[in-house]
Image (cartoon, rainbow, N blue to C red):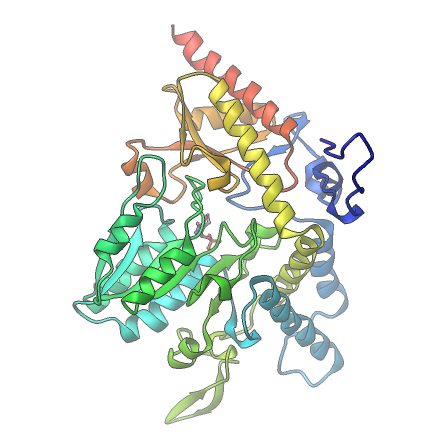
Length: 429
Ligand code: PMP
């Protein structure tokens, strides 16, 4: 929609301010394809995002032009691969405004980043009587590693509950945060409810009792500006594949002092300074945590994805998604009173994720029917079973948007859902 004033009295915004989803779609080969003879409507971006040509080209460039292992090679091609791989660290640092590149550890994804912390920090520092505070809206990858760490160390897991509108019971933090709390592990944006959590406030409360804070940023870094210094968090985890990058690469950000004090989780090549038969010493940060040949092409692809997103502007991405979420909420509510939407009422309190159910139609049936119309939405527990239990459902359908989605695609989803409901409920009555 053109929002430029018609009067011509106001100066025109600079060209780079205008954002057009239609224009960026041309950068994604897959978005021009069809599914079951219908234009593809990809609304499963919280699961993974599509890849622009720039990312595919960067990875292909590595494989076709300078495919070599990194760090060890004395020859030019290996040096080129090393520079490309290491250069991405600075892009990541800038993206999240970390102080230093040695606070950026390459991992396979959010899940591995959290497991690295639960092993390297948790198993070393947690002891019986300590508490880890998590919330009921966490993805399994920010629950299970803490259950394992608690089991192994004798620490206890405590849970912050959810209000009916899908926001955190912030009052509970005051009740549950005590000097026993050693870590708060919380998502910045829920992959089911869409809720955006007040991380700065949570960090301030955690600091009062001396607890560290880990932020699961899998759904925030791809979609909104994230500044680790502003947040004040100690650890932050995210995945490349949810931000136009490839699978198999993600980031753990951690404050340098913490990484310094933590022991390596994986042992092997590259993470050592010296190996002797009687024992080994560790490499400098961040390589101490990067054992073995890493995902070189994937890191290079992630770098291209960060450049691509920066070219669009993360704030503009956030804006567009919020607009789409608002539109989707309005259209879903308009479908009828049997549509149940989970999470905050207002789009400004959520990311581009909308989970819902329609009457008593099973979410898997909904997803299967809309698939006939070329629409990809997810159905299930979304790796967040405690949320399902909290709201008394076994599963939901979920549409999740990225900057390349359009209101027209939301319309296709709504029309398709209407047909799905008629098919299941009309036929049964
Ligand atoms: N946390 C959240 C909030 C997520 O949405 C996801 C992915 N669905 C993860 C963690 C796990 O990410 P990955 O599978 O890339 O490790």
